[in-house]
Amino acid sequence: MKNSESELTRIRVDLPNHWWHKEESLWARPLGNDAYEIAGIPVCAYGLNCGDVVLAKPDAPDQKPEVRSVLRRSGNQTLRMSFCDQLSNEEQQSVLSALESMGAEAERVTAQFVCVNVSPTSDLQAVRNYLIAQESAGVLEHETCGERVAGSFDDKPRSPESRREA
Image (tube, rainbow, N blue to C red; front, top):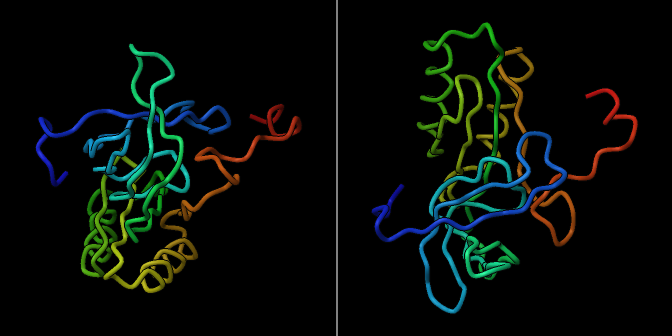
């Protein structure tokens, strides 16, 4: 995180359809007039990236501001990946080092789950090609994190059939 925590505040993203968390809390730098710059890599939200400037307002005075829209895109792109369970820390570190050498910043969320920020000065397609090759080799699974539902930062609603399978 580039800013000191004293300069940052927490904002939230409502995610009622997400497969893992129903809300995400993000560190952000207040810019005034309900504008905030996202200071970390989003873990669950779609269509949000580190450095994006968002409009966020609380639903009530005692609540964190909720992200309503993106005011300005940073040019960063978020990717997420999950290493297969049997992969050692050393093997994982090899992948993370390769990503870092391509200019991507990785942030570990759990032992297997990692969020990746690709800056606008890095080669997004090279990073994606590398992750696709790793996925083909059975090392990991990955996803892009662009908008899934227009006007929302959430995942698509699950069908009744998929809810029964979960």
